[in-house]
Length: 544
Image (cartoon, rainbow, N blue to C red; front, side, top):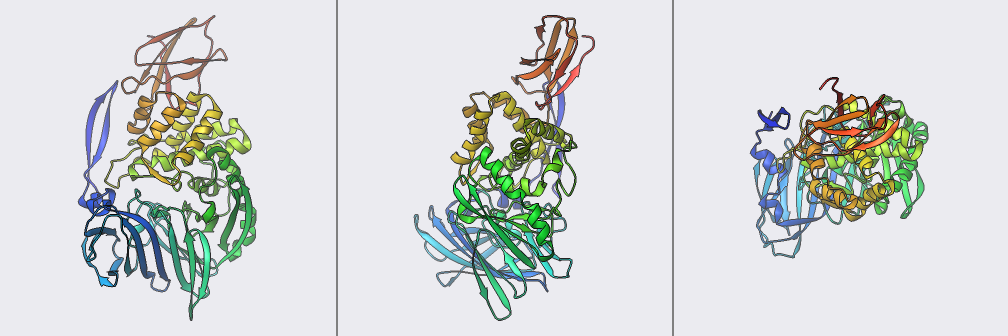
């Protein structure tokens, strides 16, 4: 476990404690673009994996195609223990491997000439880490369905794809030409992966299921699912034409799935409206039943919400609106736009994935149930915000920020919508993000600048306040007859975000700063309500 140092900093009107982690060499090797990663650009993975249920183990090969950016003779590939690399070859020549923890350094015998496209083949095997509480405590899930049949899946967002296959395990570089995934199972089971099913190959005692992704894909999004699956499908007429939808569920759940998964086209309708076209028409869209809650695997969204609305039947907002949709279908599919289409370059910026996708729950409600429902829902999720550490983690250390990235992130974006005060512009910004950063890895600063420029609002202090501190602005105010006095506390220097207050039932914009301001009202102020659509606290000072 990493040690924490607490540093106390005087900032504005209070003292805050910032936890700083002591990072290890392993954190750097995993979290940074090392020299052994920087010189080559991923083009394609071809992964062949045998899923061996009896021994809870895997064996296979990964053929990596890459382009040489600059000459180098050492390549970093990641694979976590107890998985092992058995053999690496390039053009038939054995490649020497030196290991430092999960990082393996391949000493390439072939000249690596800038501009060349090369391949190498890695054989691997072992019993991968078992996920104790997937998808949060990741790895492989080895379970049985209600009929005692093997039900197996990978779930590795946090722990990393290298928990089960040898990979360039950093989000900045995705294979430009996608992945071919060959899943070999016992002959009575079905193997489901990302993208489209190309071929089902019958072997003597096994079957191999060939799946293909033609678009770039983040490594943690590559997944394997094995079980007694049956499938059904439909076609969605979307913004980019006909989109193939397929659903892979356990045999006993076919009928209930046909009813629950009617929400998938509703999801697509709402999200294509707000975010633009589904980003992976070529690879289709599917929901795959999994032996855990679910995850956003690209074009292969895994589902384990027990065919209930809400989050396992619960409303996370406490407003009732959370029971109007299946949380896993809506949230995890929302990641197709934010996480899979737009991917963070560094996990320190994972709020881009989770903040926008938590906000997508609100927009789904907005599209199908109206703005009032959406507003009440996202405001209701404020109760989950802890303000423990900032949303943005430490760069180049494989370190993510606070879990507040979900609902603090959603409320930050909901606040932005109020500040822009033009839903057509706001929608254009969301759609523009997915168009202008299509199939790209990005930084938080890129997203911040984009929204600032497109909104026409100077948002530098806004982003610094909400993403990089734990402070929630506090609107202090006092009322004397027809006079309102107000200011912000718990803010960084120069933070001056305007907010709306309702005075005697009439909406007014005010722009607090760290110094007291005065608003004269026409008549005595009888009631004042601070609008909850803004992510702020408020406190009435009786006497000043």
